[in-house]
Image 1: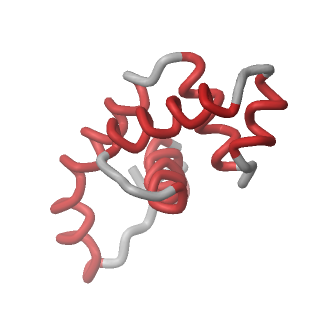
Image 2: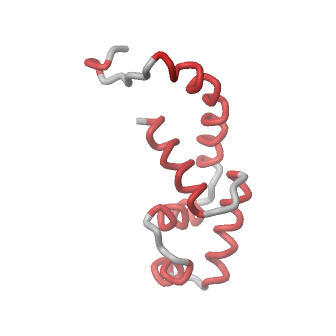
Length: 97
C-alpha cells in the first residue's frame, strides 16, 4: 500500500527497528484488549493526565480502587510508571491507525 492510498511511510533506516519491535507491539495490543472495561476507563484517564483523586471523582469510585486498577494496568503492560504506560498505549494507537 502506498502513502497516497493511506499507507504509512517508514524510512528505510527504520524498517529493521519497526520489524524488530512488531512482535512486542502485537503483544501490547493484545494486552490492551485484555483490559477490563474499568481498566480501559482508568487508562483513558491516565492518558488525560488525571491524578488518582481526579480519576476517582470522575469514575465515582474510591481512590483505593483507582490505585488497584492502575497497579493492574502496570502489571499487564510490565511498566512501572504512568508515563511508560501512556507512551506505550499511544504507540499502539498510532500503529492501529
